[in-house]
Image 1 (tube, rainbow, N blue to C red):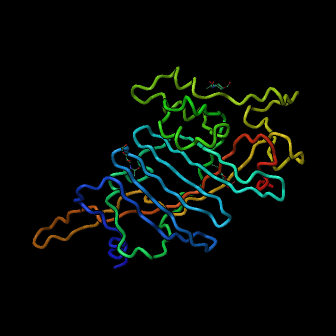
Image 2: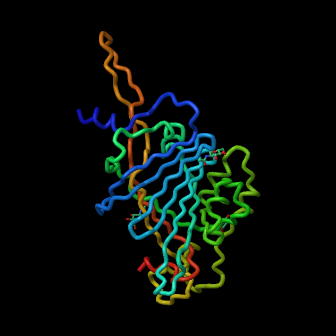
Image 3: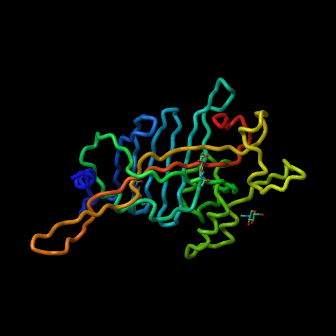
Amino acid sequence: MKGLHNCINFILLLYLYGICTTQLLINVKNQGGDIFLETITSNVTEDVITLEFQRSDGTLVTQLIDFRNEVQIIKVLVLGEEERGQNQYQVMCFVNHFYKMDFISSDAMSKLRQKNPGTIRVAEEDKGYMNYTMDLFVDVSKSPIISKHVATFCSDALETTFTRNEDLKQWVQRPGTSESLLMAAVHNFTLSSVPRHGENTTRSTSLTKCADTSNFRASCSCSLELCIGWYPCGLKFCKSKNDGKKVASTYRCGIKTCKRYFLFSYYSKMKQNCLWDE
Ligand SMILES: *[C@@H]1O[C@H](CO)[C@@H](O)[C@H](O)[C@H]1NC(C)=O
Ligand SMILES: *[C@@H]1O[C@H](CO)[C@@H](O)[C@H](O)[C@H]1NC(C)=O
Ligand SMILES: *[C@@H]1O[C@H](CO)[C@@H](O)[C@H](O)[C@H]1NC(C)=O
């Protein structure tokens, strides 16, 4: 009975004419009991899904998935504490490789309707942490080789758009992707200004954690944690009992829902921009 109930929470419409962009508004309850509104938009023509929500501390999180290019962009707009000398807000863009099967397709997304739009939803499955240590800057003006959406989406994060060497290795395998253009669109962190002699550490750990320095002007490695509290991570199949037939057939009848935590470590020009990391 419970399985049946799950199945009818969301329905996938099989036939939809003349609509290529759809929006779903979801009320999500997180672990702390906060309820917030998530907006999920899909554009089938572009094969793109965007998911957006605002945290109770005002932080605006937007995730864009470009399925065609296997790219996920997470943009985070953090409000500043002006009384502590910060800017009004800062924007960071994290650009990573994305596996298609981690989200339902933009096509399935566009056909999704909820039975009771006001319902407060909790994800069925906890996908745990994805920890990304960003070790490359993205030159936004050269980013179309990664995804054309980076330039439009991250236009207010020109100096704070990041990716990883690991992600480049995945994208270089995409058919038609030029390795030289890809390499030209990024650059390694230059940490030469902060040489640390006598330490046998790797590049990413040689930058002090913001939490470990008391110098507000020092550059450091900032950690930012966020949680996508609810997203459709797969399709659900129901069994139909065919009277008279022994074998039951299955059909797509709804979605599986997940939540996921992200932990981004990235270069911060000064500790001042990373005051939450204490
Ligand atoms: C969806 O993508 C198409 C093709 O690029 C574009 O023309 C359209 O404006 C997009 N729709 C929305 C709502 O962004
Ligand atoms: C990712 O970060 C979280 C939070 O600090 C930590 O609990 C978890 O063990 C980390 N996972 C991995 C695989 O490093
Ligand atoms: C960045 O530096 C690492 C280590 O030196 C190197 O392996 C990698 O190819 C560099 N990446 C780019 C894009 O230059």
